[in-house]
Image (cartoon, rainbow, N blue to C red; front, side):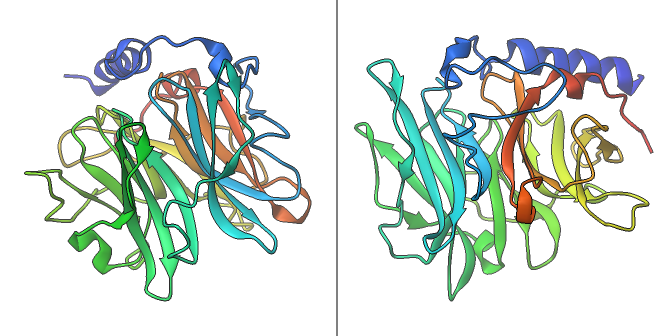
Length: 293
């Protein structure tokens, strides 16, 4: 069976009609006109603010909540959030999920059912995955994930439709994952992609986005790539998303919106090398031919 027709079929299903990709009104994205195949700054002056460092954005399934990381001078690295109330987006404020128990909070990920946020918290013990669970409309007390995952320094957690968690093992500089079984993450495994970190898994595991140093470029800035799944343990060689997404600047921390329509990422093109969050139509992924090496 040829991989290309199968992948095109799967991507069409995932990006357009999947169970987690419901059709949701476009005004939920802060009323911003949706982008086409040319990336645009997301929510300028609200989420993407000049002079600060933003990355790692995630939305609720209904697109009425957004969480993202912002690093602000003298205020540190924190998760901020905004949500729709009375038909309007609130001004983003600090989430403070660990209630100041940790020195920094970053890289939030809302699960596909919207009932849990996984995120990274940092203190003298390193970078570890924590979580909060939605209880009666509020978030529970944050807990560090009790799993072998946290035996290493880890970053950028996100989950597939089964609840399996994918993350960057910072200690080993590789993508790892852990299956959600009997309510636990008891075993860690390498994903097996050829290269790339900050991986974001498609909920149905048909593809994974990563960032990695630009090939054959002395600047070694990071680009965004896509890997297509060949089978349960093999992925295609990472394919660069092209010059519209990847520029002379660093592009990192890719993610896909819950409706499957948009790719989000950070581009480090502000003065001083600071990033803003950009978005672009996910059609840009469907237009790529996978490399089967």
